[in-house]
Image (cartoon, rainbow, N blue to C red; front, side, top):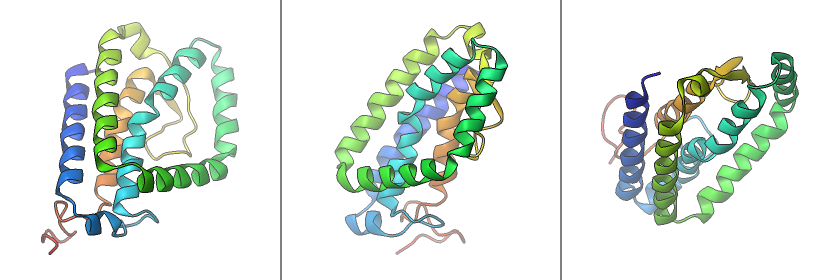
Length: 181
């Protein structure tokens, strides 16, 4: 795993997230995103959520990665069976937090969370990063059937980049490359 590349991706995300929040007007944030039921503001929180859930995801791999593979395989099947309720909670959580948290609070939360992740990644051993488990691959397009801790560390930037393309903000431009007016 190229730790420096992961650190650089996270810093790029942190700066981009702050810029998007700073440059968007209130009207821009209320505009519907492209391809989701969220507004831009709600989608921005959902993009941050990819980082916020990292503690739980990392702890899952740490625990289940030490157990026989059948345990995590069964757990992944159970979670995949609960995809529909997960999707509802995922949608409503981002809707609520996206409508509740201020821009300043979201930026602070992003900065703090990414800072903590930098420290956690630096403390991991190569053995830790190679440990893995079966994952609920129906929950997110970037979850694969089996993921190592290194894979999980790469997830939030991939998630952010994917959803950034769905924002409809002036700084994003239109799909044909023109800036929105």
